[in-house]
Length: 492
Ligand SMILES: *Cc1c(COP(=O)(O)O)cnc(C)c1O
Image (cartoon, rainbow, N blue to C red; front, top):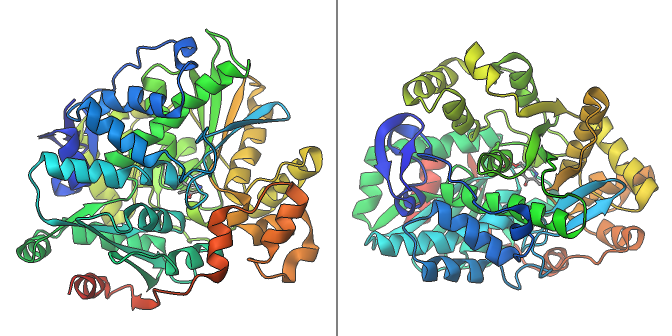
């Protein structure tokens, strides 16, 4: 499998090179030259456990990894770091199915990919005779940072620096990051929002002179952000696994299709679902759920992507994003894999913050349905679902569930539905508990975990128990204009 760039089709690299580089030269994203067919029926898929599914899917994309290398990565990633041997359980609630992606080290979906990325990266370095220390730079809107720090902590030959918007992440998310152990990790608060952090990281990655300067000191940048294909490919796995699980639970039979609703920010998770569909998984519609930062909803409605708008801090902070980086890959595919056109759109985006796709491109978006839910709808969904079923969902998942309700009402489509559950409610206890009852408004967020345990009948996850006592290890704050200095300080 060859990987090329969304902005330059003359670039051709192997999977391991694409993983190592993160971003393609010239600022494009790596994409596989073609999407491989899964080549399995859903009954065959239903016979596989999570790790076996991971191998069958990932081997089709990471063709320069040996069987032994890939299986080694999978075994080190999907082990007892997850609190259930299922890794990604599917729970039936009412007549819909929730795909729970929050059973890893940091109780959110980014663990699914970030627990395997460090292993893919160190194997990739070895395969390409790289001896530099790999420096991971990551911008986070909350969850990626901790999940990446946990994944890379004390992995030999790597260092990781995380930028997060100071005041723009939940208290639990911040505590999870600032208490992270490991000699090679650092979290830095930035006076700015997530897009400031992400733009700075992109700029540093694209800065050839800076890369040369740090390479003289034996360092090499790589990315753990969701633009890395080493993140994207492991995310395809759980859609395939979920289909197998739906067969095992008797929810679908061969020939039937499902709808998938994904709470979306950077467009990585739903893009993986789109790739799974292209591989042949029986998915009908891909329902893209946004919060009040509904730049994607507007894009699906009008064909115009326009980031020139107010940035809103919501109760689903990991979706508070105005530049959905992974959308570039979809733009590339619907343009007919045309890197010149994609590059032109991305130039418009970086200059004027806006672009409009053509009519022929819009026609290729018919698999998608865009919806959004505001904070009141999100809170009401958490409360209604709890009262109907006793099942407690987090704010991100609730955005998806509320959007799915709207989709069903608007289209009358009631086929088997999978809602992607991206975080444990224990990660956003304040928003979740006050949605259920306003009386929790003045209780400390971390103490609210005890209350949630009582009302939901689920155990407090280890990730939450740990941060109650852990000491703060990272307290640096930089202005958004000082992020080069933050990198230099870290490497000094
Ligand atoms: C990152 C994240 C999302 C958004 O996923 P994307 O791949 O960025 O679209 C949704 N929910 C939670 C809890 C997340 O951490």
